[in-house]
Amino acid sequence: MIKKIFSYLIPIKIFQSKSSLSKSIEVTWTNGELVLDSENANYSYGSLQRILRIGLKNIGYEKIVTMEHILVLGVAGGSVIKTLVDEIKFKGKITGVEIDSDMIKVANKYFALDKIHQLDIVIVDAFEFVLKTKNKYDLIIIDIFQDTKMPNFLFETFFINRVCILLRSKGFILFNTMILNETQNIRNQKYVSEFYENHFRIKTIPRIEVHNELIVIEKLE
Image 1 (cartoon, helix red, strand yellow):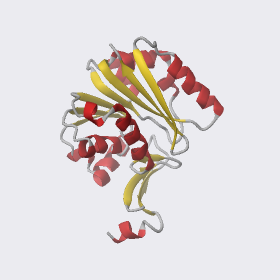
Image 2 (tube, rainbow, N blue to C red):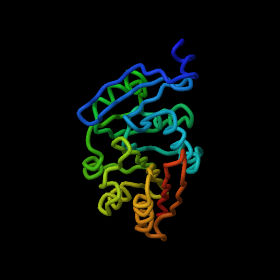
Image 3 (cartoon, rainbow, N blue to C red):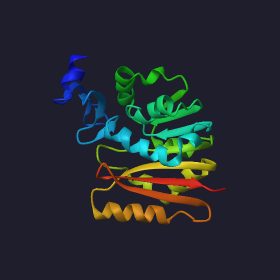
């Protein structure tokens, strides 16, 4: 409790480690809130939770609460999952895909992710999971970063098409991206342009927390 109070004055780091995939995993009290960070980016809670909450509100809490199965690609500390369960009161199934098992251990210890009964965590590369899964999803949340970098495969046509196949009719994709330069801005514009207008409705929400851009995609058929 003392650390939480003092964190309004100065961030207080309570855990730091490295994994085989992440240069740094840090848990810090900041402004009375426990957050999970990498070396240069917020991975869960804090600004990231605010960013994804905006995307979920854009889709509509009333729509999300009636869904059956949500897929989260990139779990980290699980802040978006906590938003789904605690704030939206989503009662359906959640599948979380995370490549870094050490990250999940931290999420379980400090953020009680393993206490969410409807959550199934799969430790595997997101590309491999998307390629192999036979399930269909009402909402697919894509939030995959390696510190401040995003894997190239997220923007490749094959991956885009495969994710869209996994989406049920009237389903949504919520894609969190980061734009740090004009090249990445052009990358996002190209991504949006590859969807067929008669099959999808697409909206971008730019400049959230300065550098993030959300892409919200609705499947119309």
